[in-house]
Image (cartoon, rainbow, N blue to C red; front, side, top):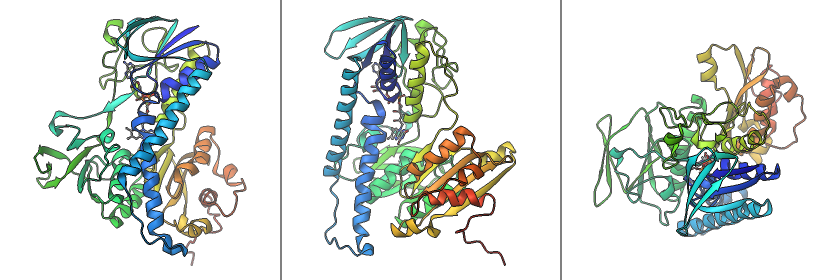
Length: 461
Ligand SMILES: Cc1cc2nc3c(=O)[nH]c(=O)nc-3n(C[C@H](O)[C@H](O)[C@H](O)COP(=O)(O)OP(=O)(O)OC[C@H]3O[C@@H](n4cnc5c(N)ncnc54)[C@H](O)[C@@H]3O)c2cc1C
C-alpha cells in the first residue's frame, strides 16, 4: 500500500510513522521544517519560553527557600536562542524517526491532481508527481488576521512573530484572552513588557468555568497584567511611534505592539479541493466521516484542517487513527476525552464537561473540590494557589474536571483517563495516591464528591 501525506505537523508525521510501522510505503510532503505549527511556532516554542520565565520567577522568589541569588536578570535574546535549540533538536528527532521508519520526505508544496495523485513543487525548483493508493491531508491552520487589524508582522504581529522577538517591547496590547493570549501575555509581562489583554467575552479563557478564569485573573492582577473583558476592538491605527487601538466602548489604548490571538483557521489554500469535489464546511474545515475519510474515497484529513479542537494531541491521535483506517482498520471514537491545557502560572487544565456545560444541558450532577493550599506538597514547593474540581453525573461517573494550580497539565492525565474510561469518583478515589504529591489533591477532590475528604477544611458547626 502506497500512502502520500501532505503536511508534517503532529497529524501528518504521526500518521506517517504509524502507516510505515503497519507496512505501508509512505511519502510525506512538507514545505517547511517537519513538526508543523506545534513544533516550530506553537506548543514547543511557547513552552520553552515559559520554562525560562518560570526559572526567572523561581529565582526571584529564591529567598523564600533560604537561597540567595542577588543578580537575577533575564535576556530575551538568549531565552529565544535556547528555545530555537530545543526546537531544532526535536526537528532532527522527527527527521531521524522518518529515516529509521523508511518514511520518504519531500520538501515542497503539495497539490491534489486526482484522488490518487499529488503534484509537488519541490523547494529545490523541481516538480514531482506522486501516485499512491491513499492520501492524507494534514496541512494544519494559520492565524486569523482580519484586514481591520493591519497585520504587518512588525507592529501588529501574531504568535509566530512574538516567539522570535529578541527584545521585549515596552508595551503590548493582546487582542484575545484565549490560551495563546494568556500564555504569551504572562510571558512578556514577566520579561518586563506592560501587557493589556482585550477580550470580547466576559472572561478570559471563555470556554472554561468562571471559577477557573477568576483564579488566573487574580494572578494576572498581581503581576499587573491589565485585562479588559466584554470589550472588542473597533479600530487599529499603526503610527510611527506604535499602535493606537480604539475599543468598542470608545476608549483608546496605545502600545508599542499589538499581538493578535483571536483564533486560527484551517489552511487548505492551494490543495485544489474544489477540483476534486472535497467538501468543506462554511468555516473552511474539510468535512470527514467518523473514520476521518473526506467526501472523496481514499482521501483522509486530520488535525487543524477538520472541525475538531485545534490541539496537537488531537491532531496526533487523528493522524494515528487515519493511518490505521487507511490500512484497513475500522477505528472511530477518537474524541471521547480531550484534555485542554493552558501553561500559564498557575497552570490550567480541564477535560470533559465544565459546570457551565452541565447546567446548560440540564444534566444532574455533583461536584467535589480541593484547594492546593491545604496540601503538604503545595506548601513544600510554595505553590498554594488553585484547586481541583471534579464533576460527576448521577451515577457517580466522572464527566468533567478542571485543575488550576501547580503542574495542573501533568496532573490532568489521571482525570482524562477517568473521563475516557467512564470511571466513578468512588473507584478512582479508592486508588492510593503517593504522599507527599500534588496528585493527592485529586484524590481529596474525588473523596469530596461524597463529603469524605479528610483534609478539606469545611465549616460544620
Ligand atoms: C502559539 C501556539 C501555541 C500552541 N500551543 C499548543 C499546546 O500547548 N498544546 C496543543 O495541543 N496545541 C497547541 N497549539 C496548537 C497546535 O500547534 C496545532 O493544533 C497543531 O500543530 C495542529 O497540527 P496539524 O498536524 O493539524 O497541523 P500543523 O502543525 O499546522 O502542520 C501542518 C503542516 O503542513 C504544512 N503544509 C501546509 N500546506 C502545505 C502544502 N500544500 N504542502 C506541503 N506542506 C504544507 C505546514 O508547513 C505545516 O508544517 C498551539 C498553536 C500555537 C499557534
